[in-house]
Image (cartoon, rainbow over all chains, first blue to last red; front, top):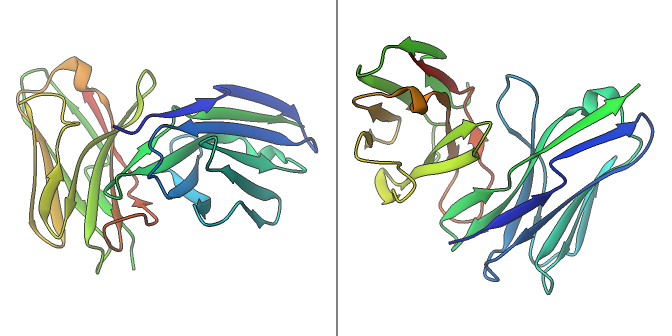
Length: 111
Length: 114
């Protein structure tokens, strides 16, 4: 089945710095890659997603890049703020029928 | 729309008891997913349904776990008998249709088995 690897598991940055989280996937047929943010005690919520026909997508301070050849995709957060502190999950659709998540990255933004 | 609704939000039970978790997906969504979240194993897919039909239950840990979706607006996840290692947060999520689409999660059901 699909295997999604996510790194790093924890990330600490200073407010205003950038944060990058990387994921790899195993199924070359995967074609949809969402990113979810989960605050403590809350549900995962979609923050950005990308489909395989696009190499990069931006939404204000958040961007996602996709390298289909290498089966890598990354989340970039610029000008980080304390409210960005959360656990971030990457995911990949597998076989067009279900979604598998990475293990998560705990991001801490220090003021 | 009220989003994906799960109940109960919290459940504390004793080992050996039956546990039933409930989910109401977003109206019009055709796919429903049950995930389990623990610190050790992260978000694990247990089972998902398309148009009320179970498609893949390979993630269900063992026969103690069962899930049903009798109609488009209701699903249950049952654990019988429950064990302490079942303690986790169980999330239900739904999407508009099968295939690569946005999942909307419920608030989760936190289960503690003593």
